[in-house]
Amino acid sequence: MRIRTILLLAVTLVLGLLLAGCGDGPSTAPAESPVETTEAPDQVPADAAESAEQAPETAEDEIVAYVNGRPAYRDDFEAAKVTLLQQYIQLYAQFGMSIESMLAGGEGRIFQLSLEAEALRRVAAAALIEEEADRRGIQPSEEDVLAEFDSQYAEFLEDQGWTEEDFFAYLEEQGSSFETFKDNGLDTVEWQLTLDAVKAAVAGPVEPSDEEVAAYFDEHRDNYATEEQVRASHILFGTSDEDLLAFLEEHEADYATGDDVPALEDVRDEVLADVRAEAERVLAEAVAGADFAELAREHSTGPSGPSGGDLGWFGRGRMVAPFEEAAFALDVGEISGIVETEYGYHIILVTDRKEAFEPELEDVIDQVRADLVEEVLSDRLETWFDGVYEAAEFDILLPLVEATWAQMEDVDLGIEAFERIRDEGTVDEPYLPYIIGTLYETKLDDARNEKAALESDAADDAEAVAQIEAVEARIAEYRDKALAEYRLALETVGDEDPSIQAKISELEAPRTEESGADESPEGDATD
Image 1 (cartoon, rainbow, N blue to C red):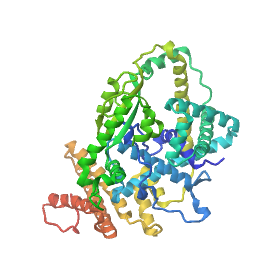
Image 2 (cartoon, helix red, strand yellow; image 1 turned 120 degrees about the vertical axis):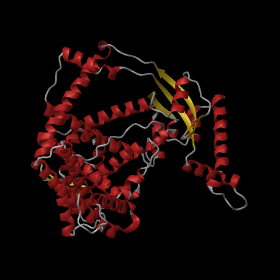
Image 3 (tube, one colour; image 1 turned 30 degrees about the vertical axis):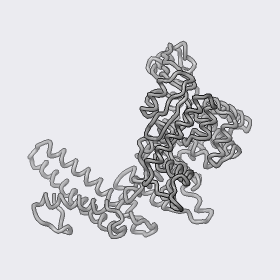
Image 4 (cartoon, helix red, strand yellow; image 1 turned 30 degrees about the horizontal axis):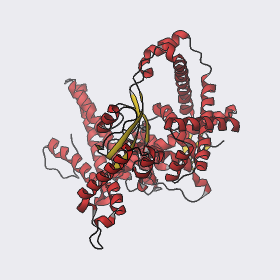
């Protein structure tokens, strides 16, 4: 059994949790978006999705690592990397921010390498789970996989309030098909069942007593309370630049002067007014009894449009404030007026409501027991996995990723690995000196903190003075080395990354202040 690309997408969260104790790389789970219009873009930025260590077009180079001798494949690695990046995009989008700033310059390159290292960790983790499944002969049957897929698919449609036709329309809108969805879904379910079976096998049976179940409920009582929730649909008339440009292009004849179509900035206020006027017209149709879902499919610019505008259930704190206030003020079946948010103009229909509910144990005892069993199983799986991961042998074929792994374990190991890559000249990486410089700067910061701690003890004996002098010597050494690397990076990269010169200026400034002399940047460092 080889883990196929889609499986990596399915186990990202599980393996991310397992790896929390296996390194310092990023392990960011996708957060829920406060309003649907903050969802990640469909496409990952091209420069981010593309690895700096491109695969040569030979079959053997489709392997990026070996985990206990088992190959880890580039397509799985790339899929895990894109998934991680999408998680960051979603996280930033929640706050109306773009991830582009994190991908620029030397810091962007360091971020990309950390992302690649984490992606490979997840692929390696999946390989270890796969290895255990093979060792135990775990392979879900086709019948079990199909039955579980059908069950999850039916539950998914019910939760979304979609018919199959709604879902088919959504897939078509996304440029996909049900056949592709089902193929990927079957792979995902197969891996899910495999992972569950491995978890059960390595964890052993779990049979909590009634007393343990009651204690678990008391400790997690808030988890079983249901907050006030509404289920709503909406029609969004977006007002982002992209939405306004699309509206302008669709109605360009209304704005053109002769053969000239004006730029958006020249007619922005007029376009905004026309978008709101269209929202008012659609609102009048909805209030008059037109089918709300059909209006959403026809007019909404939000991603829920193809599904009739349905947003599902949500509680307070999930949506932006104006949207939330309007939705929770509506009765079931009531339609709002025009609600303006930072994303555009909304028409909201509340389709259902749940009041807050705080259950007693007997109301949810089966769920509580299942949750306790799952927690114990997961804890035992994590303990097992920590041991397996610690004992595993990794042969990483991507030099920069291997060096990043080393850096996550120990800064000195990272410096040694990155300097070896530079000395060997095997990788063309213009930001390599910058990366090495940041590692020396990390050691510089640690040494400064060490000096501050020694000085705070206020000891003036010979031993304390000698310790401080030794730390000062290391501070001077690390600062010189960091400066040398940043200057080399400036030669390599040029002026396209202003942060490099900023780093140099920042490190040079204290030398003049502390030495009390007008030293050349090339002079000896003192502290």
